[in-house]
Image (cartoon, rainbow, N blue to C red; front, side, top):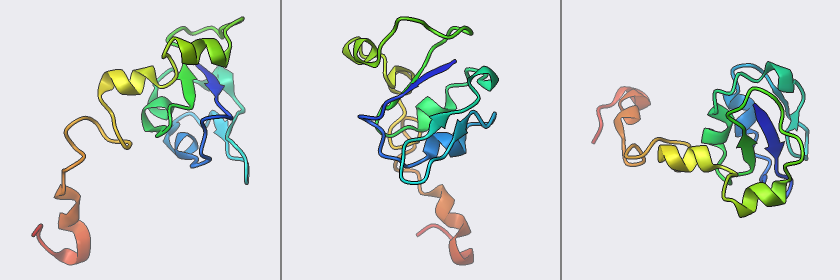
Length: 112
């Protein structure tokens, strides 16, 4: 379940809002996203995977954590830990950063 959006780390890109299939977050103009519907979180970790700054913590537990602070989670290296363990960088899985296959759809041209 999504537990934390770090105000200190968040760059307000709203990638977590866009990635969430359950509409758990609300975007806030000029602010960090808000966990608006925490009970709807299905613990899919997509928000954490797409967060470029490790500003999110998704607990693998179904129940909300109590007594855990952002500082404690950061010190233990748990903010963004799922993304790192999966090898994601720049919102892409390991090894796909150099993949140019998407360019086949640009202007009807073939990849150079």
